[in-house]
Length: 435
Image 1 (tube, one colour):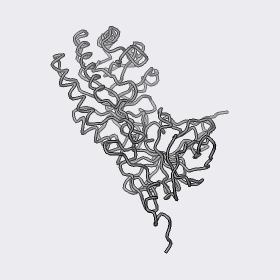
Image 2 (cartoon, helix red, strand yellow; image 1 turned 120 degrees about the vertical axis):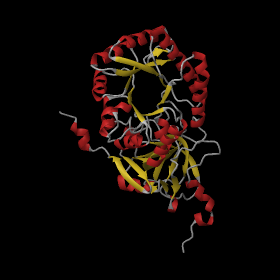
Image 3 (cartoon, rainbow, N blue to C red; image 1 turned 180 degrees about the vertical axis):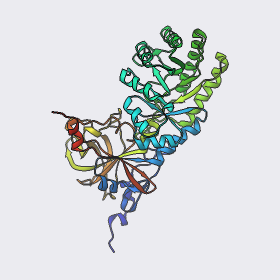
């Protein structure tokens, strides 16, 4: 019988494990992450190294049950609200199927997202079209598809939308902290003027306001303040314009952790802050509390996904160790946290110590995938690494920079894997070039 150093010193196996969070800290790996035989990391019972072997790398892996569990959690906490999953974080036909099955609505931002959602069988009446500076084509497509709600954020957009309509269209007025590209200042004269225009238009039905926190937020009380401001603004518009607004969309922006110890919004505290704000605001304005809409995207998709890469080189320099993986610009993170990632070796146990390294893609001068991450010192070409918390924005913002091909998405559940988005081919790249 063979005896290895790992058998003699079992504590060395800990170097292979991705760190687990301390009490009170959010995890960053999918909830169904475990170690299989030989130290191989598995998600939903599927070893990630087998996914790499079967589908190639880079490859995005999405835990279906994790995604659906997070969607259910939103519905449970906000039982009286409408949960509209933000498609911009990640949308495929399979993801749209999960959204439908879990009873969520869908927030879309382009005609392409509308088309994909329709192809997946999403009821257009459950869609909210939201996005800055929507084009005439996007508005025309949304009207033809009979999208349930359209968010308007400028006087120009009000005019353009009205010109497309022959029947009444429910709209939300976009308001924010100040007048900018994302709408009108909440409670301002310009927002009241825009509301009057919509109310006076026979083709438009103003049903509520759309607002959100700028950037990512881990403080639930900021959402409470947002709800209070929204309720007051609805009361003012109803009184000044003779309107009957009854919906308040508070958007997304719920922060998630990318490393253990990172700030993250506690979902239950978020729900309690919203409920408390509604309770306090109702007697203040003397009108019934509005129907709340929440638009989570990143907070449902991000931690359900991991991206798997293969090591192609290990370079030790005077500036530290650089681990080069087969990542190109097409799958480099585009969500503002590119160098703040959790990375683990997933295909084997390491043989010894760990060291702090920088994980790089193959593109010279590109942003690092992760900095100052602790990985086994015996890494070598052919090893397989997984980067946690990549379910949101990696696929949706991927590009063909340097004529690279975008990575596939593999859904995993109950020990099985299936390809829900295939890898892009050279023929795909060539198809649009007419010469």
